[in-house]
Image (cartoon, rainbow, N blue to C red; front, side, top):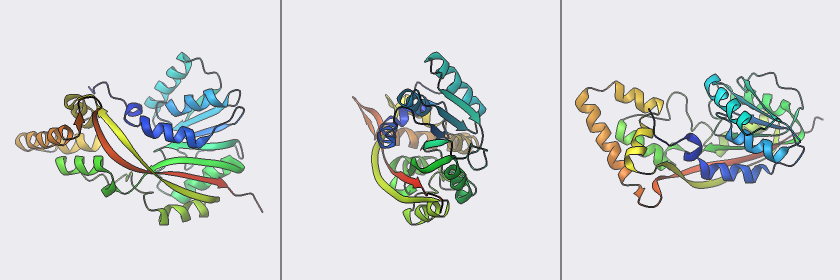
Length: 257
């Protein structure tokens, strides 16, 4: 079981940056890519009302939580659909703005995926997303990898959009213009103390897999290194916080010629 930390708490500072940049207005139609448990979707729904918001994710379990929370908050203008944004059949031109909080880095074909998102937007519709910068610029990723022996940049790489010289042409080829990447440096909250942070981090899939593959002695050494890394970033008042670097990506859909 994990501690009291949630993904939303971990990224609360990034969430603020995304919400401010999206500038969602009353009456707008919003698409939330990789919505998870739906915090960003619900926030958008409150701001967009009487406009509507659609949250899309590939996890049915996360979407079930999202639906429960939206119902508890009595938000009639939000819906959730199971689907991969790379191939999902969105209504063409059906949205004014697409938002994403770390939900666009895992596409197998990013040009096709962003082209599909662009088609879902009206001409001049806005894309506002947060993605990670380079692995080595993110203290949290480096510290975890060094402690446990993982490599977060392998496999489903969360840093796949870290290079502006790669990401900008991807978006332009997908049908976006006025692409901008703004540097975001915000803390990531891992827990109120080391014990809570350790429980949270050892719940990460790659960390869990690495620890499970170790012999008992090696596992204990890795856990001790992880405790020390978390302890070095623990403040009595702020809990365990790591420095992070991300890009706030903004663009608009090109008008058809």
